[in-house]
Amino acid sequence: MGLNYLSRMNTNQVKELEKKTNLVFLPIGPTEVHATHLPMATDVVSAVDMVERAAEKLRKKGIECLIAPALNYCLADVANVFHGNTTLRPETVAAVVGDICVSVAKWGFTKIVIVCGHGEPRNVDAINKGVEYAKGVNKNIDAVVSQWLGKGMPLMNGVCKEEHPELDIHAGEIETGLMLNRCPELVDLEALSKLEPNWNGTTFFEDLANGIDNFIDLGAPLAYLGDPRIATAETGEKVYDIFSDIVTDEAEELVKK
Image (cartoon, rainbow, N blue to C red; front, side, top):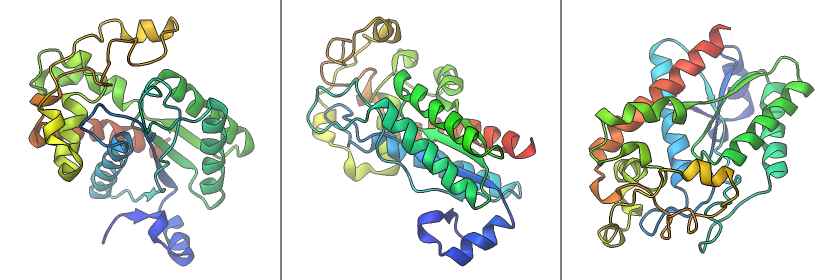
């Protein structure tokens, strides 16, 4: 039996699933520029990949879950100097996330794990505000925003092949490996071959907090930080298995509360 995708289910199937679980995943990612070699959907693919892996791991432990349709837009301001990037205002992100949480909770799915593939601080703050709104509307809601990025990045030294995995902030080996693993047809290999390592991310988050608000001025004129050329599908598999372990543990802990 396949995973429980809300968008593919009918109302009777949702009713039946509610008898088995109150756990739901909400994957989120922006339509955002990822260098010149990766598609705009990279962060969405990342979020969905982690959710699906986690759902499979939970099922092996006897825990079913609902997978809500991915939210393909959120706040992505730092890349908003490149063609095609799409961003939302923080209040819009908070409103949409909050309304989705309230909606799924109405049908019994009150344990909500939000997995966002995009770690821009203002976006994360907006998602958390949406969660707080939802909890205020429905006291039964118990929702968490996954900390896969913060917990997972310190584990990359033994997995990634690049020289400075801690500086792989955007569209580097990690995300390129994911896309080579999951959607290789969407990776522009010619563009990838021209990208030299970019280790300008040493003070990236400090500079962002101090008001430098775009990738170009933050040292990423082609919207990437890291070493994308070294990426392989095999590394992508290992990295996202680790990230999904973190999501699995978070979901299991939430269910047991």
